[in-house]
Length: 136
Image (cartoon, rainbow, N blue to C red):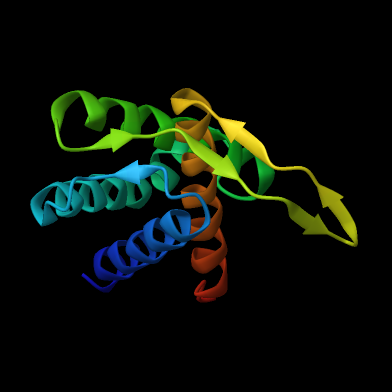
């Protein structure tokens, strides 16, 4: 039970971080749509690691982040089909400064906005899950 609640909280934190950075997920102010989206992503992330390990796919590292990004982007796309209030909007990445190098701003269409949002959600969730990992 703790794992399910922890996964749900981590997904909520990752969705809020993604909306802060990109503002590409629009759920029309409807809390039911937001709740369905967050529960679906929590269910996805809760079951993805054991299923991937069962099939011999990576359960940690860059490979897991890549597969999680693909699964999250597919999940977001399917949710936009079934939930009419949920929309992936176009977004603009403002200029980023990484190690003193200024990257120019980039305009993303809806597809790349979905992929980048899924990458941020998967990245933040994987980082938080890694921080909370307990050794048994």
